[in-house]
Amino acid sequence: MCAWNVHQLVELSRELKRERVPLAAIRELDEAYWDGAADGRMSCRGVVEHARLMLDCDLVYPVILSSDGRVMDGMHRICRALLEGLSEIEAVRFVVDPEPDYVNVRPENLPY
Image (cartoon, rainbow, N blue to C red; front, side):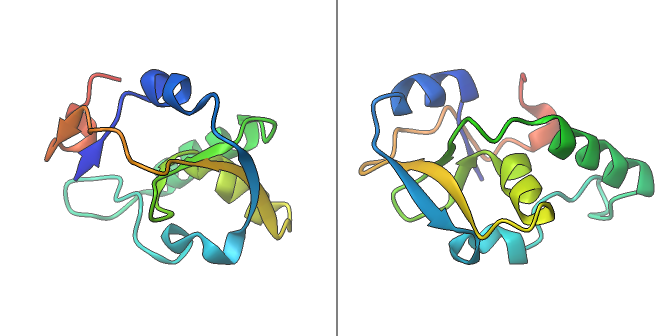
């Protein structure tokens, strides 16, 4: 697993061209993405916590995609767009991915 400092990603992607990306092209929507616990199962409380983050996020900010279209930042925004019945979302995409800040660090062990 690779992870990036989100604040740094936002800064590095600031000048990238914005584009409209079909939600159908976001592979993570059909993959296990949030495991929620050591056993890989998310509780109802975990689902509600993520739903709250989806409802609180702002679609004015573009999601950040890697050069191969993987989500680097913005999954809650993507889920909100899907929930609202949108077919596209605004995104920026790296041509060359920045080096990850963290490699093989479990999400619960990241410093943010």
